[in-house]
Amino acid sequence: FSSWFQQMRTHHPVFYDEPSQQWQVFRYRDVVAVLTDTAHFSSQHNTQAGSFFEGTVIAKDPPEHRHMRNLVNLAFTPRAIGRLTQTITSITQDLLEPILPLGHMNAVSDLAVPLPARVIAALLGVPAQDWDILQRWAQTEHLTSQQRPTSPQASQQFLQNLQQEMFAYFAALLKERRRTPGEDILSLLSQAEVDGERLSEDALLRFCVLLLGAGQETTRNLIATFLWCVTEDPALLQRLIREPEMVPAAIEEVLRYLPPIWSLSRRTTTEVELAGQRIPAHQTVQAWISSANRDPEYFSRPDQFDIQRSPNRHLAFGHGIHFCLGAPLARLETQIALPLLLSQLKGLQRVRNDEPITATLAPLLTITRLPLSFQ
Ligand code: HEM
Image (cartoon, rainbow, N blue to C red; front, side, top):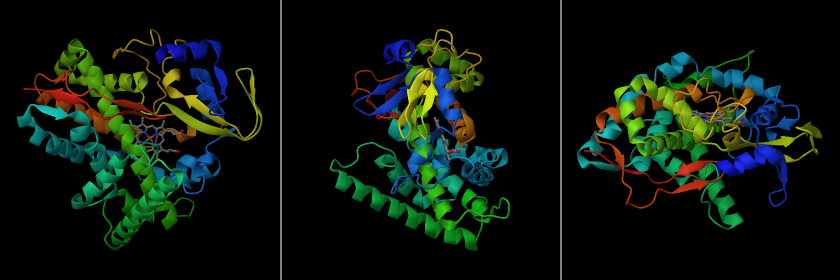
């Protein structure tokens, strides 16, 4: 992929792709321009009826975006996220304990899938006995794009049923939290006010579903790609075990090198010029984060995986007004869990003759299986 991106950046930085009828944007500065210029590049097309993200903060443009973001920000304060430190540590420990005596694990199903699912459950105040439900929703991977039933009708029916199931679950949970509020974000947000306005019940339920969609598969893939990258290079692995304080920089480099979300889509509101190309109104534009993150104008030796890289202004969490709300949580979660794993699983290495590691690439990079062994 990296040489294809390089070619596109050099020869076709803003490219109309006939088969998909979409405009593709490859250079760092143009990706930033698309994400910054919300007047010309709208996020609202995510609001197609029936879309999981319909009416949520990720599918809003200014000025509505600011109001909703201010409200949901109240739940993602450094204090609220910091409170999860202990929870994340004990969830990680609970997941590692049963596999420690085994000497092998599938890092995806044993850690990368259940950890983010349980952390979001804790954030939302979902009781432990229901964690499996959230994990099942996460594992079906249908919140975003993967492996839907093949016929369009079956797919739509499936998504509708899933959405109804999630709404009904969160509606019941919200009712309970209103009766007995806790420190979870559902309790917080049901009372939060900005300019005298609250989130409607519908908006709150949709936000819960957005968090499941935005926060699980992405963090899951960050954990998996991190473990993939460090087991590629035994010297790097040894260094991170010796110097766990380097893990945060390594996480940032994984985010740059193999970002969980490869592209973000926008829709033009009017005709607009980008890097000398005229893009007509009402066109879909894909801004390629994964290519921007390898742009040599912004990163020296971009195809080299280098945990010492500084500065490392990757775009894995997006840019501008939609910059990932959950970035501090994703960072905290991985900065706690990964050093714990590295310190406890001695002699960690990739099982190379096991079933191949499979990765699929939609707008999301997904490692579906990652067998590791240890002593
Ligand atoms: C937005 C990436 C984890 C919640 C975004 C965007 C990106 C992104 C690229 C921008 C979308 C756009 O501009 O259209 C990631 C990555 C993650 C991660 C790579 C993990 C490694 C999380 C987590 C949560 C979360 C853990 C919450 C629990 C959100 C929300 C938005 C968002 C609510 C929308 C913000 C807005 O529109 O103002 N994320 N995300 N994300 N993310 Fe994340």
